[in-house]
Image (tube, rainbow, N blue to C red; front, side):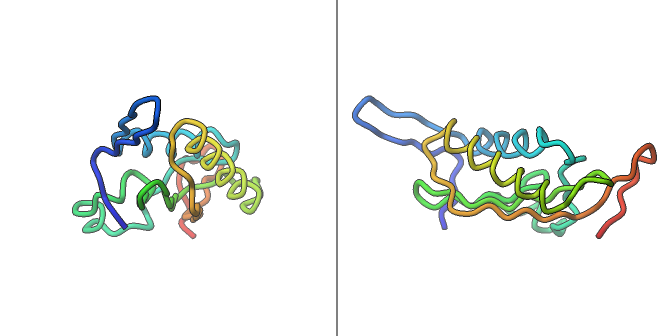
Length: 127
């Protein structure tokens, strides 16, 4: 699995360069726009991994392999929403967004629900 700061895709029409943060922001925004997602969570990652790994970033892990991408996203869900339904919609939205906005093909998307947010309290009950 390759890690990069900038990926250049070459076609007959020219070339397009993607920085790592572009794909990371697509994943974060795609997950947050689903009803039932309270926030992205860093609970699933140790502080050492967050500090030293270039694959982890604010609630998600992205691994690039040539023109393919694998995504792990860690979310907190609002109380009252079906976890399976929310996770499935997050997967679909991330895949659609990455493949429509970039030249990458999505290999897999893993959604980890790390907590539940109850209305009004703002506190997260960690699963």
